[in-house]
Image (cartoon, rainbow, N blue to C red; front, side, top):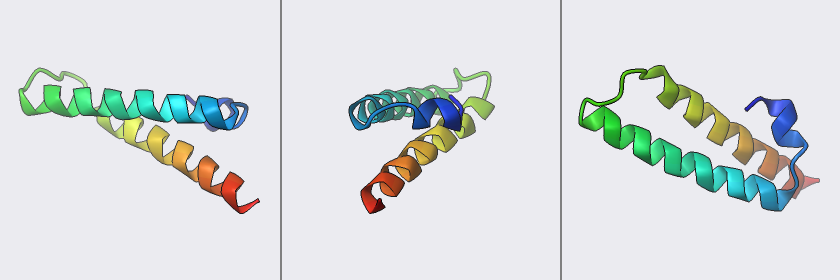
Length: 63
């Protein structure tokens, strides 16, 4: 997801997406550890998306 799509979501939806991406990251890490993950670049993408969501949440708390 790109930053524009994330900014359009409300706080509850952001929390849902954050939980989904954290679960996906867990799954990808597990696959990577067992040598079943073919596209290791996906790990970085998911981490960046999680960081974007956390950044948006912190911006909203400060405002």
